[in-house]
Amino acid sequence: MAKQPASERRVRGSRTGRPIMALLDLLGRRWSLRILWELRGEPLTSRALRSACDEASPTVLQARLTELRAAGFVELGEGGGYALTPHGRELCETFMPLHRFAERWKR
Amino acid sequence: MAKQPASERRVRGSRTGRPIMALLDLLGRRWSLRILWELRGEPLTSRALRSACDEASPTVLQARLTELRAAGFVELGEGGGYALTPHGRELCETFMPLHRFAERWKR
DNA sequence: TTCCGTTGCTACAATTATCGTAGCAATACG
DNA sequence: CGTATTGCTACGATAATTGTAGCAACGGAA
Image 1 (cartoon, each protein chain N blue to C red):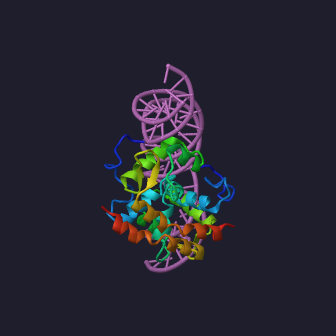
Image 2: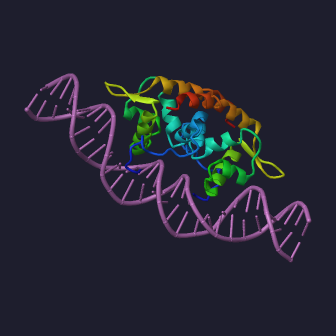
């Protein structure tokens, strides 16, 4: 990944300036949705989060966490451990109905 | 992409058998969310969809459309043009509140 | 028929993103 | 001091995505 701060990084799909595009792009990256989902309950340490995310490689997880932190959805607590910010919690609850949908959708 | 039917493909994150994981994984691939979003209104031809998706490469779009069709969210009309299935429309409306959230979230 | 224009879709090489493993510096506790 | 955490990074290998070009099939007009 390009060594470039997330804050300066041009978000794919945001060229139109529409926030929904930037959001869909951010959530469309690997493990983004999953991370938010796994943090919906209690805060998790980086390693606990990794275990929850099916032992995904720490490289991507750190990249996603950096992006999600820059977006203001996730924060790193003082005593360690990642947690959702109020914004992140709001976002997470927005697509929480996906759970019920998924249960009905499973073939 | 591996030349392997989507139906036989092991969905990432579905190793636990939980449908939500398979869904989060499918939606977490590039352009998946965007495609569903752009199809929320009227059906679009493959090229119209490509234009709506910021001229994304047809390779990925076709891959995503194949997956979304296999998942039962998108269908290809007889006279051409992609549209949401009832399941797809239901899914799309599930995360439709993201629009309002994104408007509030934009800094 | 022939000529356009459109449809869905694919080939192919180049570029990115992700994976998997290993390990670092900092901190805390005994 | 050792030991075990924490968040985080290096780096080669692999997979996904991009960008450009183009194909075959179909339809309408000339």
